[in-house]
Image 1 (cartoon, rainbow, N blue to C red):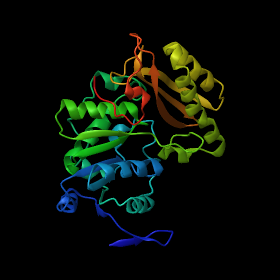
Image 2: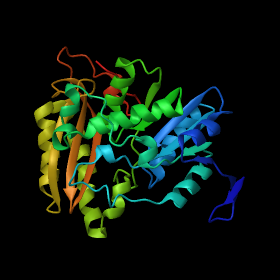
Image 3: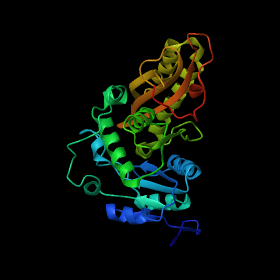
Image 4: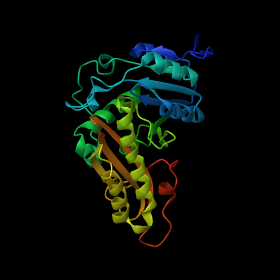
Length: 309
């Protein structure tokens, strides 16, 4: 079956499944090499980059579209999280997605909120986990379920949610999921703003304020030769100069342990409110190593996927 896009071009529509049996049927003829890209919908160019990366990794690509209630806190934006299913299907068709799995919560959690969840371990209570208690247990639980349901060889996640990427990799390794987890670099607008489904909440004035996040990360990265204190000071100076921003977190962490970084491979992470919208971003920072050797390739190259320590 093909669908006509707004441009008039005809492309093959992905198979759409909204039930477990429907997903099994849709995957029955799938190629041996399979990739999955997990999303909460409201797809944009960042998701398209993930799908294109998935196509390079495997012959068959499944995209999941599911707004997971387990990862939202009581005061967060579950009810108003953007939903645009028809536009999402158009993007999936343009990117040659084979299967879209778009279940409702009762399909993913048929018994209601699960009694058994995935504990992210100590790293799950750091950083974003400290600001959003329980968030990563919800994330890892739904990722684990979707991996079991879609049965991929490889799963791709964006580096914008860097802590999430590290924790998913740790879960896949520690629990022997047999899935290769690949990180994909953050996609940005021409002015540096990291693409996010939540950007559509921003007014033009708020969007201008949000650019301070990427400017702060660039300033921090440029100060890497001065060590951790210089990195944090440079980034903080940019953030503090933007009155439309309320900073939630600014952290410089080791790329594998997520503990405060002192040298080598590290990530500078920021979370801030612009109005009522909470945005996150991060950048690799090549801190000088204490032994005088050059920083590792992971910090130097945003294409590298993080790995557990």
